[in-house]
Image 1 (cartoon, each protein chain N blue to C red):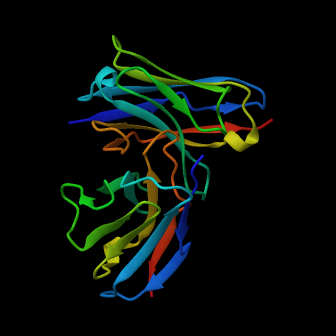
Image 2 (cartoon, each protein chain N blue to C red):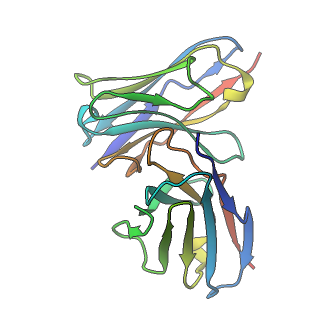
Length: 117
Length: 107
């Protein structure tokens, strides 16, 4: 059974940094496609970033230069380093994985990031 | 970047009705389009990929069509358990943008 468990969400002050983690089981992070998607309260899904099986990384314009996606094969874990956070980054952050390019087969349960002073 | 626009933003239909949701890309994406269903308080669930391929386990009343810039998700006979928000997502190239969602309710 595939499980993606996202952790690291917290209440953080504007301008702060936070690192989210997504521990995978039954799914190999180094050989599949993994994304981060967020959903602000009462809003729709916003795709943020993907790391390809080959290691390539891509970002939405809204987070480019502030967020960094990475993975640790030895820990089978995905990360999202988030810097220069603003209130607009307040959302539930989901890690999401897929065996094939582009679409998501599995979703983690989400971790809440609240940016507020 | 390519923008994805869904219509309508919300709809209300009766049980048994045929429901159609449209997703339009600002540039052609061939058939690199997926549809997801998100029920209230739940995680999104993949319904369709490659514009019309039904994900395993998804009821056959769901279908997808289209290519290029215009796509549709059809529910042939709306059921109470289909109350959800539906999202399209393009993946011809990054960014893998979602549409803004269509909320489906029962009349």
